[in-house]
Image (cartoon, rainbow, N blue to C red):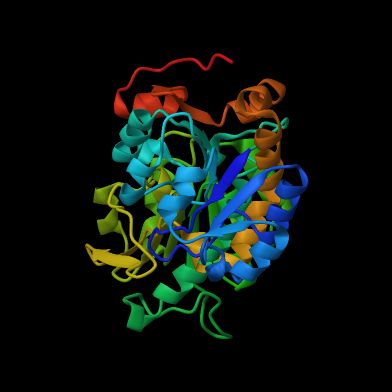
Length: 368
């Protein structure tokens, strides 16, 4: 198969979808790999390293899309890329269709086969291609939240861990999935007073058994969340419904319950956001203030640490990319029903129910 690896052009997205080591594996399996000039530069990989691994370097993004049977990316195509995607081409990347109608319609129109990292499942029912970036985003959410709690960054001026004689900041984490648990570990490690919520009692029991003593659990309900907000300093939203829009756990009217300078970090923003007042921001302009509350809603948080993120992501995605390239996407999906769950759009038809429901489109069951 002919594989193209374009340079990411989303704001401050420095990750790359395939490392030189990944190129070497693909080439060893008999595939041809084209990498766009400087695609790996942001993650610390030079064109020379890709060439040495067996890739051909192409000068432009247009060249890369034009030649490839399968495009492997990190983030979804953005508007300048829409017309580059063509009928029959395989698009293997994070797509998050349920939060972007324009992207969804563009990929429907393209006739491409779109396989979304975020809805692929493994035999345990988990999301193996989402987990690595969720781990990074969860840890980064606390790091970024701590930064914007600083007074020069519009926050309250609180240190998460406090100091002897001064109480630590209170951190509220909504959702005890992979993002939430990693956020709790980081916040606890910094010495914060951490509360994590979820609607699953088995999950809360597991968290209570495994987390440090400064992490408390709380059943997630509107009443319980509202009771926490007047005294909280940092709120991290990490709720996920795979492939569908995230629910709003913080509504606009709840902002008035929080003290000025409170920071809220919406890690679910690439699925539409779990705060009603969230809208996507970028690493260049990561925050905005509404009703005296600092909103951080960067849609590609792991892009700020591209070396770590690229290695973590490609460790997970490469085996799937190899399988698709070796077998073709249809046979690969027949062999692995979990990979088939990643197929969101095929030849103009939406094959993932959450995406169809998000935009009122016809849903077509995937038939292999």
